Length: 79
Image 1 (tube, rainbow, N blue to C red):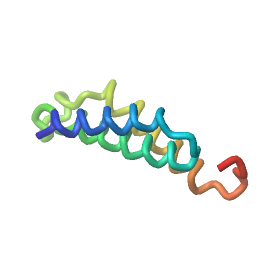
Image 2: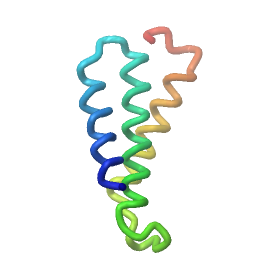
Image 3: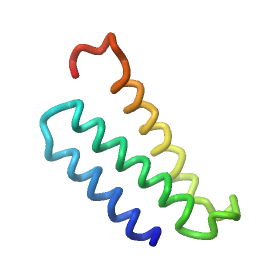
Image 4: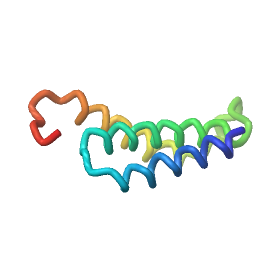
């Protein structure tokens, strides 16, 4: 099941590059990042922290937070 979440995340990330609206790109990218975080946790035994894919989880969690920041920022008028 985790593999399918990884594929879904890839579809979101690649699909985001095909769009023009920045707000929509950020939403799509945020969902992709969230899927990659879930993938990194559940690919192996999620109960064992040592088996989490931290090189996948950490940057995607940070990117998801960046997207949330820009989507909720009121001072950003470029959206």
